[in-house]
Amino acid sequence: EAVYVDDIPSPKDCLYGAFVYSTKPLAHVTKIELSSSSASQGFVTLVSVKDIPKGGQNVGSQTLFGSEPLFADDITEFVGQPLGLV
Image (cartoon, rainbow, N blue to C red; front, side, top):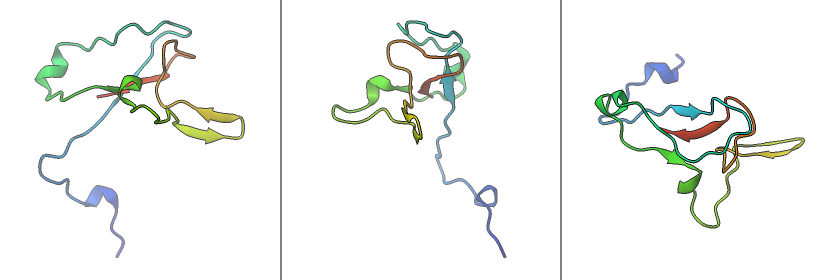
């Protein structure tokens, strides 16, 4: 019998995450604003490029053409680029 991830119950006090994406290409990232409804839905924190420890790497994936960052830094490269994780 196979056990699928969806069949495993979540642990008590489990946190779920969702990416926050850029809505504009080649835009300067000055701040990330979340709606006030986020707080009412059990919002805990935002993890962004600023949370990567010194000496750490902002690498989301390695491809044939080089590495792609996990989070946008100061300027977004394209619409839909991840800015953070809530």
